[in-house]
Image (cartoon, rainbow, N blue to C red; front, side, top):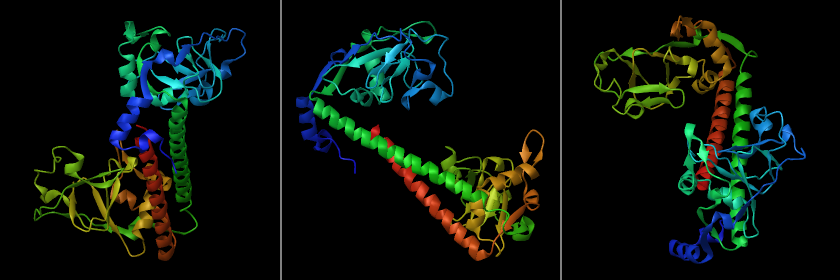
Length: 389
């Protein structure tokens, strides 16, 4: 369990009082001093060159980017020790005045274009990165200090970058509690992110194994066309299909409700529950959906709509459609010139390995369970990201 530091556990009035009495506004230069240490004796080499990422903080350049962008000699580079602070002095889209980070990793070297700062005794250095994680606060701090030159270069000395005001707790013990709290959040985020990606990888590996151990069946044997024209112009809700969400109401996908809102809907297809549908021009990006809305809806006549026979479990088939096996089938059978199409008649030529219906149902339920776990870990990950904002 992540325990909040004391100032976050108080009520609004108590927190305001606490901030007024135990925090103070001071120049950043009262917490940091400019470091002039250089790699003059070549103690550090190309493998030790560090970069600064807005999302990942201080990183080893080769490990993070796959190569070093340093020149032939790095003897004049600044030395950045563990626990020291670095200011990039280079604009990013979200941080037009540069970024400020604390080095939480190994000692290394950085370009002389960067400002490097050593923490004074009254500062827990991680607090600087936590304080400037919000781009709005970072930009507000740097904006009055930085002059922009030609080609959007940032003109500011190392010392001048410390002349802005910050509000930190007076006691280093309170600073450390805040750092510990955010360290715990970072660990939880990393854990959920790691579990999420590992389970997604495992799920994709398992999907590839739904292949050749079972009877090969043609799609023409196990599916049939199910798109019925809306000849009576029923006022059914209009849907599109996306690769992320499957069936999506047109009024959610488009601000004006889409082209189908005011169109004559007699030429569109009625899609009844338990049907598959896809756009033959976008199937290569996964735009296939399964209609489980418990009501009839309509889609453009450009879509292909089909159902399965009693030999197929729809959940099993849905997960197979998300595998690389289906992508290979599309690549093999699609047709066209500049734009490629994968019509239903081409799908019917494809083969699908099928176990018994009981096994299909077991596999479908298993992958549904994996999807549920992935959703939970992704939700936890996003929740902790919000807490850090």
